[in-house]
Length: 298
Image (spheres, rainbow, N blue to C red):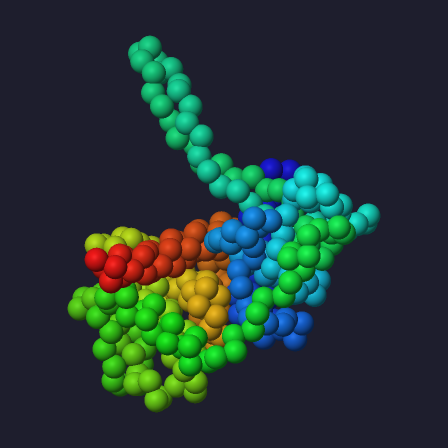
């Protein structure tokens, strides 16, 4: 890639952290958002995932865009619309692998899988003229809080995770494979409870019998610990967007920021890797919902 997208995105997130802000919480605290927070959407309504969520949330906040829809120049043209002159697009990335057959010294052929990432440019629909009206419709606000919380309750229950209540700390115990949560009434709001539960259940997905995620953590506060906490942070943010919940900064964020900064400054790919792991965790938890529907239907 002509521009180092890893470095560009990492520098932006580092700059936010150094101001005491967390990029993945900014959409909910911004004054220029209306309706409920959703993930950025492609022209066909499919949601972006992983690092692209953070990149486009940040771009929308900086420019004041209310619409979640983004598309490339060609897609706008195919819809009979056009990007306004002088508008600047924002980068997103596409990651995949290619397989090449290479001849070895002994004359045999061996297939090699090579990962790659490329960047391309998208425009928010507010930068585009002539699009069908539905692209400019704002997300409907969540009117019934009880229904939303009921939905969150059902979502987390469907995972079948061993969730225990009591004490003053929220954590995941790998040894006993359970999530420990303070009682519901201890939290400032129902949403704060479910946002915390989303964080801990993201940790729950790392178990060897689930996603088998291991960053080599040896002690509290080391690099492996910081990387796993970053995955849980992003996983919770993605799930909160999916479930129309409002995440809140945890009391321990200030302590974590310095360890996250250290990891990001030493590895420009760290936040990309964390976002990819977080997306896999969120997708894994979503997978239980379809299984539950199938079970009920049967």
